[in-house]
Length: 278
Length: 173
Image 1 (cartoon, helix red, strand yellow):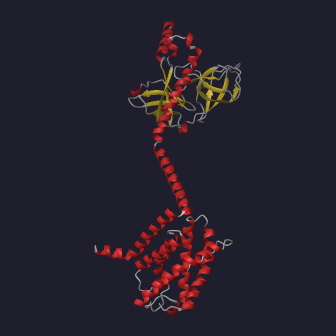
Image 2 (cartoon, helix red, strand yellow; image 1 turned 135 degrees about the horizontal axis):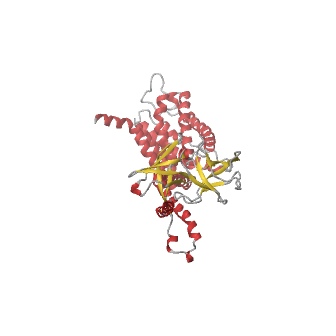
Image 3 (tube, chains in turn yellow, purple; image 1 turned 30 degrees about the vertical axis):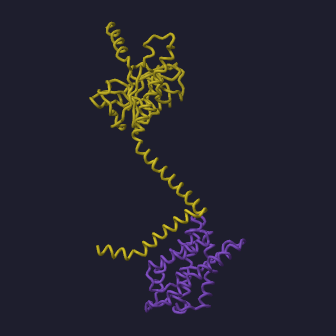
């Protein structure tokens, strides 16, 4: 207590100075036009700046939710885009009820594990059987095909990346309708091979390669890449086509799992035909 | 003792009136050269007796400043500068303390402390006062060059007036 009193006595000069200056400045701002203008201007600027900073900080904390929201919106838009085809093919006035039912739905999933540096690369996603995921469904991202779901647990699913020696995706040349399996043979994560394109096909360098939609895993028209090199090996009836892909699998964060609603129906039908013939 | 108080009261009244009625008009009158502003009333704060308590010096500075402000119709501007001057007076006194220390019964006048010491003392405080005054008057440091020019010009003229007062009247207290 004594120390405190001593301290106050020691500081009394400064305290009196402070109090009087505050009074003076209040008077200055209150009764002098010019200074008042400067003061209000400065205060407004400062509070404006503060407001801006706090808003941007707040927005930063919202980024996670914002990302989730955007991913959800993306999947919704992809839904619409993928289903646009069937609706156009079957205009409403001539269509039967099933055709306006969506064929594909997209579920956004977070990539929680990824590899690109092996011959057999896998991607783990944070959606599983609980979310209605089943094996042999496709996974796409904003810039192309990512892979195919192989196994599903309750909460997770593991997809075979397209960077897998056994991955085989049915692809076609855009607008030319020549199709074949797309495989990964090289060591370069961006180079794929499109096989079974007959040598009379009018394919040129720079043509876009997209999913064909013949498999039940991917909707048609998802871009994969462009033709980078093509040549004919002697004695072969097919082109050897190297495709440069757009997908950036090395830093993928979000992916969309494609669900084909009629998948089972289509596969059962096809299987029954094959079984009949055998 | 009473003598000191009376002479300080007289100095207060005369300096404030001189400042508010005479030098105010000189400053305003020179339209072509608005950078000059003669400020002499801080001399009152400067010449308060050495034994005056620090808080009292600051408070008297406030009183002098606010009185000048009433005459200038710039409430608070002169007062804030005078409070500042009163506040830093003790620091300046400590820096300029002669080898033997102060004789606490003295007032820091030219007669008692010598012309060299007084010139140092008065110029430091006056410069600080005028700089503070123009800063508050502008109320922003955006025009710092302007503030400095005004401060230097006004300081030289005001300092000359203060030295003349001291030489003419040469008060003991």
